[in-house]
Image (cartoon, rainbow, N blue to C red; front, side, top):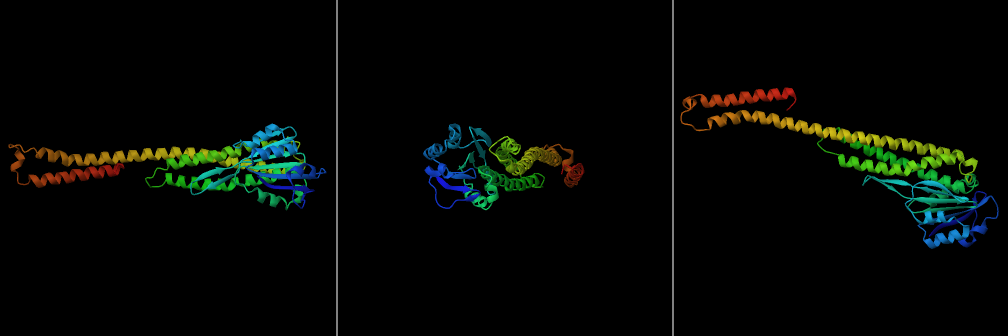
Length: 322
């Protein structure tokens, strides 16, 4: 459906309502543009927008189908941009990504929302910046890019917190094995990585003036957004390396604990073998055993058991096996 439709004249929203069939004729000068906001549009709605503005068929095809990779692509005299906003569900420790598409042409900008991204709030904020909107449809692109990129940092902070927790778990004295959680966090970091990294190249190209539709006055703003993307990419690369190291450390810890358990079992088995041997010898009940008639035989055997077991226990303690 059409979420909002408005004309901006010299950076200021023109009062009154506007119908889609009148949108193209509404801009009668170069300082005017139309902003159409679409929320999960149907093919019929997209076809109506295409007829009104003469959109390129490939741009329309991309807008109809979600799940696009973040990109910036030129179709005829328009620029098609795909962004992936992200959020973090702390309860599930899961990164959730959406999709926002923008189509910028002469005198129009079309935003297509495929998730819960609050584009209306972005519109309200931009309407307070007539100095930006005066620069045309590309100002809307910057406003959406800036909000999406800024939204990556709370997700990065949340991932950083969870990675710190799992790192502490690996080196704690508890017997837990957080391998499953490590794998899950690594997968979530990779999902955010796939949303952020593809923006590096197109934002750099926009900042360097590769797209004529982007006014020169807006390039420093896109340069700033590109810097934030680069910083986010470095953080995510560090997360992936850290999680790999934490996973290796966890496997090492598990191996060390298994070795410690094996040594403890072996030590106690050696200690128990002494009384087992002595009781086995004197429990055979043969008639002609010299020690059977000895008055102090029983207490001496018990004492020998205790002394030998104590000596073995002391030796294993000193060796670190117990």
